[in-house]
Length: 336
Image (cartoon, rainbow, N blue to C red; front, top):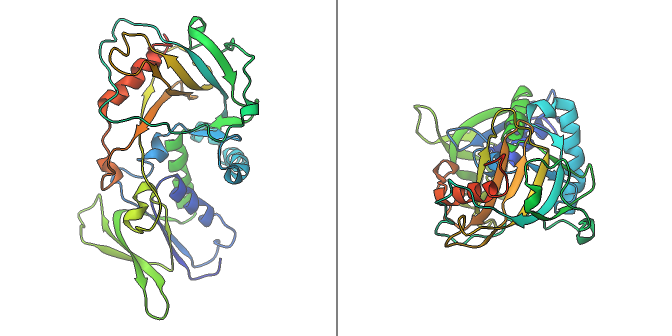
């Protein structure tokens, strides 16, 4: 990296924040006059979308393999170097496919699937069929699922092949580490990537409207390089990008004090009782991620809700969230 570059990163999700970190910690950045600026549209800070509200699964069996072969080892390195276990909940976990039956419970009289068609998030596409064992039953230490409700449990990978992070904590810590190395952080919605088309098109900067301040006039940041990492919002700045969007719903559950939740990630297939699904689908497949703070993250299917102007304008479907809660509660007294 030679001196004199001005790099602007658009988007404060996991891609934008880790890109800022890797640029700022690169040996050729130290001592150079290169500047790095990250611009995030949300007035609440970075990681407000999927990068803060995902499950945080880190798996050797994920996809695409070309990225996994680099990323898993790198997650291990980052956690060791920066105290990831304390800062962003890094740990190895058990991961399995659970099939069984839900049971009725007294306070369940609501919940619905919302008005939109649900779609799979396809989290297990990278898993080799040969890696799934169908010979094992309910693990003895899986203490927050009723064994009596289990029809089958299959580990999805060998020990040491699956880990997790808390995605919001990981992303925000990556930004903090990048800022410690000199990265500038700006809050504002980018309206354009500025290009000089004379003598061959080249980037000259970006224009954005600041958020979270009294200044609301469009402002320009000069740049020799622009990295677009705005996720589903990227096509608003570069319409030719083939990027779509899916809205996924999730909830977090904090069990009663003193309850110990074993470190498992489960991909479930639940046969629902009539009291939980009186009018909707009779099966559900929530993903359940136990986190080291005893918080449990639960995710349902996605839908094709329209993409709003910014991540701050995303609105959840309360019925979809309630469905996830009821589906999980039907198989776990501890999470109920």
